Length: 323
Length: 224
Image (cartoon, rainbow over all chains, first blue to last red; front, side, top):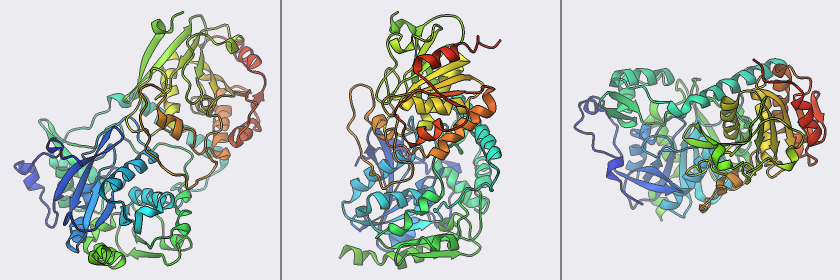
């Protein structure tokens, strides 16, 4: 465990950071780096360092400080809440290749640095899907698994004829290859605090402008020419491969640890659009799936108190885990 | 010909890729894609006797003289983009892939159908890949090596999923867009499930490596 102050600079004197302060948000109480092979991953913690650990895992194109309201609620109940920025995201290193397997190994490195014992794990979106696969491959790490709207089920495109699917796939791959030809020179466009918040609002239309401004101050870097998101500019949405959404949920029935899924009822572009009805038939023995009405993909951001209460009720008290 | 004098470094994201010019000449080049754990040959291989034109060979990411990434993260699709970087440099090619390189050659034939004038799929390391559907396969951190190939490349690219119905999509793309009757030729004698499916598709030829090279070489010169 290494502390790297230069990676986590004090920005409290920045006027924009002060303007982006969000009621109820708490910065991580400890920040350090964990090596994952030749990469350095930024780890953020809330709560008593001697309390039993509970891991939180963010989604794609997010970063762990999006948990700045939700994580402190879990910490207040007696947990040492530990999260990390996935490679290329937040304060972690940018690297040459990004892949599911790489993210999985990075998760193992962080977990191994914190505990050898099973711990509760809460994953949102892609982070939830990642943890479902890790729970299948390495169940010994998990005392409980909570999935926050992170269960891909089917492709977002409608059924189309074979020939049309081939044409669509060819165009998608062609565009992706075109982007790879120019990715070496990709940069993040700078902007004001409000401009970056507005841009992110396109991905997070249900989240408040105040929260989006706050996200800029914790997920962005303030350079002389403006704010830039810290995420590696070489990462982009899309891509392709043999993976199929339904392959994630088919790992569910075999899970041996207690499992809780919390879905939002409102479909969003960033979400998977999976319904409780689709999940229920795959639930493991004793597993539960709850849906929050009038809540979108970011359940823990829209309803932090409700989701935290559900998680705490599910995992039990931290003192019970510690005893 | 000394390979060191004829290596062009291409940029693919943060990775530098070594493109070796094994033989100069007129006309469309043959692009060789090596197998898993191999690297571009230093000289023109004997098995290229059926090709009398220029020949180039690429070192994939993590192999040969190309960059070794920090912390792995390989996929066949990333290697496809490696091969596409070579296409950006060379223009029209005929592509010959060994093992893993055969799988990438198939994808390249579909994804860049107007630039690939024939893809030859040959035996070699990494031909099989992983399962055709998900497994509970474990994840491990590997100690680094001082030299290529990258252990993560060997590990991750030997277990990537290759569903047959996914791979035949690339055959259909090649048939739709290349204008060739037989844009893909299977020379490999070993046929994992994905390759057996490809070989069974209309428009996929089967022949010896020598005959495939001669056939594709005869397709004519580089388009103006």
